[in-house]
Image 1 (cartoon, rainbow, N blue to C red):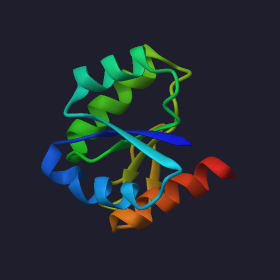
Image 2: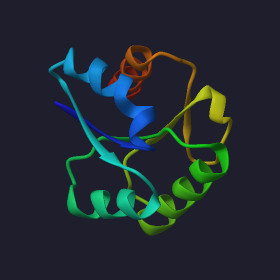
Image 3: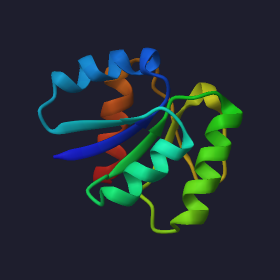
Image 4: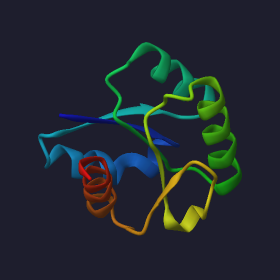
Length: 109
């Protein structure tokens, strides 16, 4: 089981929920913004990856804060549209299924 913390507004994560429901080896947790993400990460050490589905500046702030608060945090991912952020892995995929597959592939290698 791979647990992914998805950070972003609920309307941007619905496709991911549907894709994850078709893959029993993926569990999604949700946080709407930075504070929620920090809380989830502090309370749940089973999180294997963080996927940021927010605008570039918000993604940068969340990534920097998470990495500062917890240098051992799980890998952080963003879709390619967000762009490069230090310490964050960029996923070239665009559909929900492709994003999840890319995360699983990255974690397996």
